[in-house]
Amino acid sequence: MFQSLSTLANKRIILGLTGGIAAYKSAELTRLFKKAGAEVRVVLTPAAAEFITPLTLQALSGNPVHQHILDPAAEAGMGHIELAKWADLILIAPASADFIARMAAGMGNDLLTTLCLASEAPIAIAPAMNQAMWHDTRTQSNVKQLESLGMQLWGPGAGDQACGDSGLGRMLEPEQLAELSGAMFSSGALSGLRVCITAGPTREAIDPVRYISNHSSGKMGYALAEAAIEAGARVTLISGPVNLNSPERVCRITVTNAQQMLDAALAQMGRCDVFIAAAAVADYRPASVAEQKIKKSDDTMTLTLVKNPDIVATVASHPQRPFTVGFAAETERMLEHARAKLERKTLDMIIANDVAQQGIGFNSDDNAVTVVTRNSEQSLPLASKSQLARTLVTLIAQHLAIPRH
Ligand code: PMT
View 1: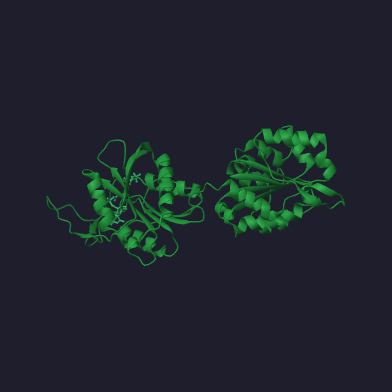
View 2 (view 1 turned 180 degrees about the vertical axis):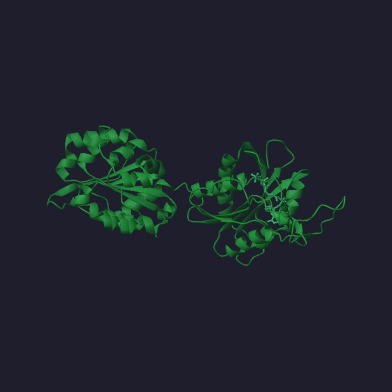
């Protein structure tokens, strides 16, 4: 695969086809996008459907092809506004002179022009037309208008044309368009990498109705999952019981207790490049779980607890060890304890948070942390967990680039 295509992993692309003989090349473009790991939804104008069948594009994209704005069946599935919001990129290839003119005039008289009006995603246009149509002053002024609106113009190329003419007006080749699309996302710091994140608390059963747990909400781990997705990673989120919706495009595995979380984490070994342990795992569990609800009898009761396996330490000592990042939730001497955990658990990085402070740490929307590695220390001031997660992902990506041993 071309280097820049790896940035297309997990990206959502609307590929719009308008009427032109070059539409056949967009079948190959769809295939290249899919091969690079992008999700593709194809939109055909009525003129495009004269040149290529929806069935071909449906088979290649793995999604139904969208054609009409007033199609109740399509609107019931993914409506046009939903589709406009869904996209990370809209690429119109081939873009006919007629389509470019309608876009330049701000029209919304079919599904594709409406999507372009309604979407905040970047829009790229790959023109394809007869060389005289391309050079026509009206087409040129329309193209300038689209560029002034921030749309990208990819091509056209020069060469022999289907009509027998020769000159500018050929649609760029599918490989070129795929590369240009990949370059749009090249800031993806974790592109092509597989990231596994633990989040939330664990619950250790005492009897069928009681358990030992903690106040973790899962917000920190879920924010990291979203940030890693944004950075182009494929993300598996191993989540304890939380009240959060699964972030889009994340593969979530739900678990209850520490042993299940460990089993799920070990199943990812060999399939993950980065492991981030944001979960607040119960350090101990009851030695035995009562089969029936324990009855209230004596004034005091004693629970015997046994140590739970240490998940992040087990991952860090695995033969297929990923880049391993832990968290340290501390209420005193934060950096000293965090450094000790970094060493004892043989982690690559530990993110220390002072969970005694009000408004950060457990079950809050914000956090403030210090990122510690063997030879660095960096404080990240109070910020929303989402913002902080983005910074943490960038720092992790930077450290991944440094040779480890
Ligand atoms: O979920 P939120 O409400 O958003 O709160 C976020 C958080 C405070 C839970 C999070 O930022 C955090 O600090 N997570 C780690 C909590 C914790 O258990 O810290 P610890 O210092 O006890 O553990 C150190 C590291 O070992 C952690 O990465 C932990 O996931 C891991 N661990 C601990 C015990 C165990 N048996 N297995 C582990 O993997």
